[in-house]
Image 1 (cartoon, rainbow, N blue to C red):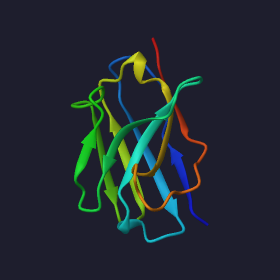
Image 2: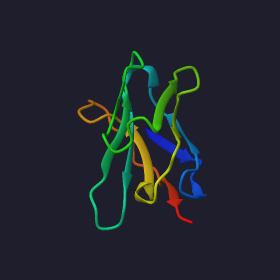
Image 3: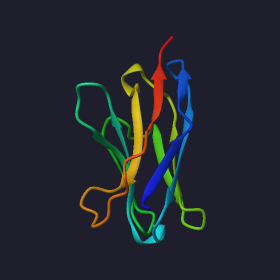
Image 4: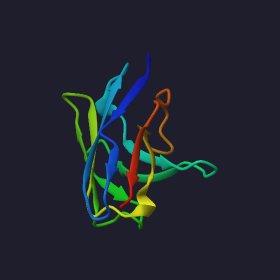
Length: 117
C-alpha cells in the first residue's frame, strides 16, 4: 500500500526550530521526487519544498534560507529541517511525491506545526 507517515511537529516559539520526518511505504522510494506541503483550514495545500531523485532541491520563496529538505533513500525517508520559524509557518505539514509525479502516495494525517509565543 502506498502510504506516508509524518512526524515531528509541535508547538515552538517564533525563532525556534523543528525537524519533520516522513517515512514512505509501498514503492521504490528512490525513483520519485518528494516534497513537503502545508495547509491551513480554508486554504489550499501549498508546496513548501521539494527534492529530486538526485537530491536537487527547490523551496517556496517564503521559506528559502530557513528550511532544508533532505532524503535518505536507504531508509525511504524525507526530512524537513525548519529554522527561524515564524507564526505564518503554522500549518499542518504533509509529505508526498512532488507535483507532476506519476505516482502519488495516499495522503497521511500530516503533522501539526504551531509557531506561537
